[in-house]
Length: 127
Image 1 (tube, rainbow, N blue to C red):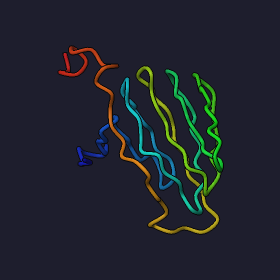
Image 2: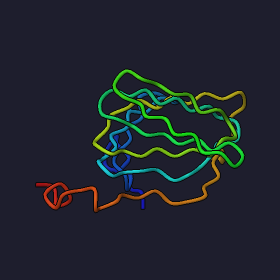
Image 3: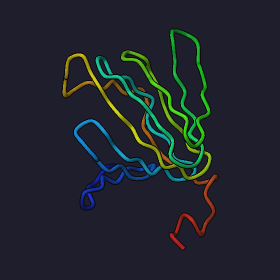
């Protein structure tokens, strides 16, 4: 379930803040992950500021896993299902660019969430 809190959009996996029309600053909580999804025309770049982000890209029947650390980036081409996961808290910049823009440019195969087993009770209750 998504809601808005000021200039930051709250997600089940953390928060995203729009820096420009195609650039977002993501704070992904430990155990957080996005839906498995693809964009028909949009490229997706993840640049890790801090922490470690795992990005999975599916190509046909193959799954490719990339572990990104501080300073690393990865480009996800249009038409490729992908998903990110955070084993620890992560800050990253997400950049989109397209050849042609379609506002409905997303097809989800799952719903994002957060594994509570990877979160301590103190982190979960905000203490």
